Image (cartoon, rainbow, N blue to C red; front, side, top):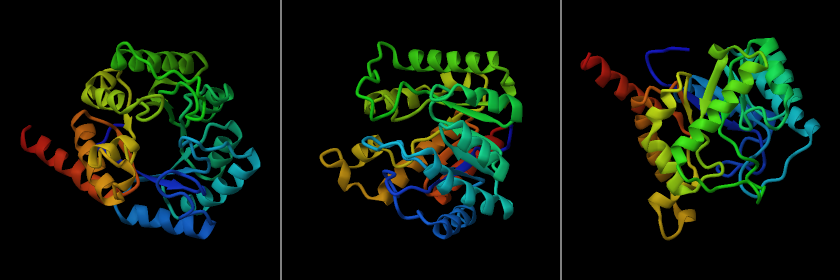
Length: 274
């Protein structure tokens, strides 16, 4: 999965309740149109999800998630888009692969449904393993760390080992440190400060900071809700620079143009210095 530049993964939420853009692309036609806009805006691939994982969200039924995701994946893939499917359900991942998706993005890292590893192993599709200690709606999911970076990295390595033990090829795995999941703002900044630790695991690295609350808190400390999308996107582009400098495979973003420019700038500097 090597490439000259950090890839830009555009976020396409086919949901009514995602934290940043819930409901804006909820119909099939609107979702497909926005997917094309993301590609035209600089995204290299599109991450299609039909279930929000924001704090306070409720899980949707399997049937509803399938109905939201599969038609959009099929139409975008038919137009030549590279698609990842953002799901914790094996049935949704399988149907999305059948419809033309090529990457599985499982925020639970195979912990929601164990069959995800079997699907990845059998299909050969790249699998994103995100650091996850439970749903954001689960009050029992631990958010305490004695050593944030070490513990997150160790827990990711454990999921990598579990996937390989289940038959997934190591070179099909991608890791994501899970910014915002079972982490407060301080934890997120600690992870970002040591992206080199995650790059040293030796697998493609996905960084997903786009528009998250800890960026809004940076922009507007007294009232994070007052931070505009433009301000969050500016902070996201800065994170893209950090991710690209750390050699990340991709960043997952809502607004691709500024992050693509940021990634290209890092590549230009690196080439000039080589």
